[in-house]
Length: 115
Length: 112
Image (cartoon, rainbow over all chains, first blue to last red; front, side, top):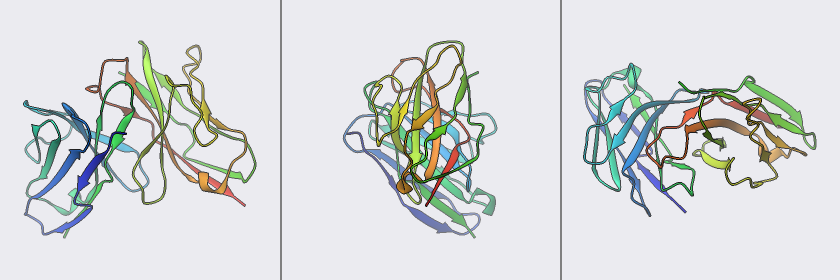
């Protein structure tokens, strides 16, 4: 079945630095991937839709300059948290869908802690 | 815009008791509905799709268009069913490019 790999699983960074999170579709091509943020004991909040070869579509209230998304190939999307602040600390999750015969597949998530 | 409502934040049942996790949606078109489960410290996993009409781990869910509901049911709860359950909706059958809209989730706790 469809597998989505996310890396790293966790990262600690200093305030002001940037962090890159990778999301790969391992056995299928994904023209579209999705990036979510999940706060403790809360639901997933969609941040942006990553489109291969074109600009990402950001949800209302999400700063595009803060959360840079690059979808350079059909199997890889990256989310870069720029100039990270402690309030950016969260659990980030990516997702993709192989085709209509499958549901959406989720990565294992990245726990970001900004100190 | 589409919306998914899960009215119960926490549902606690005893082992062997029936379980029903409620999900209501609002969308004027023909949605595709899912149930996802998140076990402790694990990634979200697909549990059910309304299109496939299958039963997974004893869970079933029927789409009721009249009541705009997609409740998740299981006749006899097991301890391993304890997890967070999310109902989700995507607009129509238009490929993988449409985003999922999630409900707020229901934490199911199965007690011995």
